[in-house]
Length: 160
Image: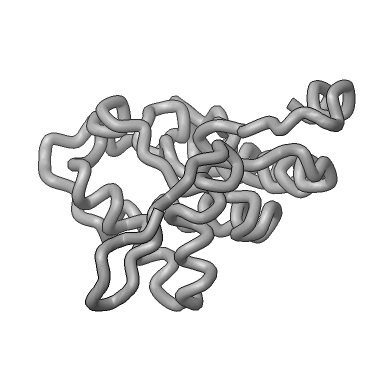
């Protein structure tokens, strides 16, 4: 992705699923090495202003968390704890104005329900400012994909 961004610097690129760290079937030590490589590469990718990153897709097996093997319901707190290092690394690297929150549902459903998934992402950013949350959860996506989003004002119908 970095080489592609360098070759086409005027093209907007959206990196999907936090960049897909491949940690499936690895032990804890190997997953830690994968995370350190991931962090280094995300920081390097951030140096390309044409790359934006979708934050999600964390329910798929390649992350190595193992939730897809469980039969019990997994709540948002447990998801947030497992996903936080990758989510925070992505946001730290790219910032809220180059990150778009996403789900990869139904594939993410292999590890969690739709509501716990979104609650986990919201929980991770519970201390973010209202402006940061607005950017992450709709503003950046609307800008990058050039979608005109109606803005609702209290007591009024949304303007277009």
